[in-house]
Length: 157
Image (cartoon, rainbow, N blue to C red; front, side, top):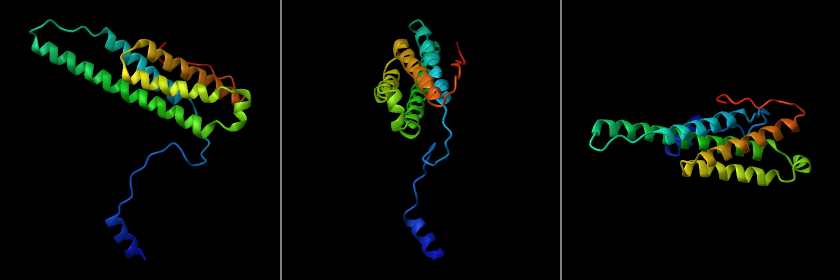
């Protein structure tokens, strides 16, 4: 049997998977979404503050483009991570009984996910802030469902 399993894996290897978490771990916290959303706001501000160098200065232009590309990559990655963390909360933590207290729960999460997409698609401080504001609202809902008053503590006020 062991030989058969090894042979099968050689011809049909399993895909590598990542998750948090489809198991019954019960460990949820919107803090992950807050940290990544704050990174999006920070990178957006940095992008908007970048000044294009004078024409003809190739080295300065390359440095500018490199910095912009790095900021954009981080902004997009962090917006995608924010969306992931929110979707995990939405689909794995929140239950039908939470809809009684928050009948607009699905709309709130849907709009939050859309805000993550908008923050990725554009260099817009308004969209980045909209995403962070949505995360804050979800933070408040989440902790209220646990009967706890956990203060919103941004890392970068």
